[in-house]
Length: 142
Image (cartoon, rainbow, N blue to C red; front, side, top):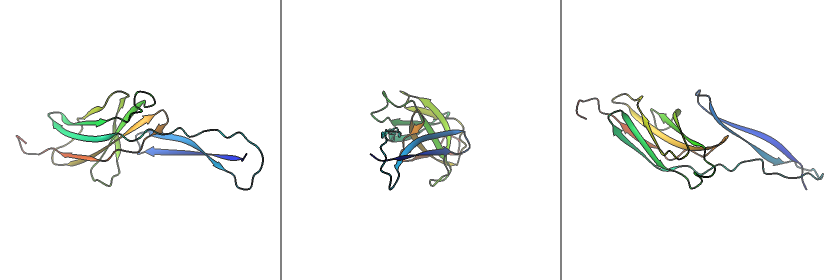
């Protein structure tokens, strides 16, 4: 048996107050005392896939395919947006489990918006999905 040191890991998503945190165990080197090892790190769900952005009269309608863990461990989704592909991304919306769409109505014409989505499972988050982008024309009629 080995000793384990408990480390806290916190990942913050901008100033929106949203965060995913979890703990991991790390073996202590050179320790021979017996301890009971436990799984302290919840396994995050996989990232959502097939992210799509469609222009609608209200703004952008965003859809994605959930990970297979959605009915069991996923508690919701965070939708993040940036004005440049490399970020920074800011969470602009959250939806509950079983919901795979979000409409972003806080967009302006002639700005390209980049979106990513991640699954939330309690205090643990998946990696972000691959990105998708959209732009609303500033000209009447599209």
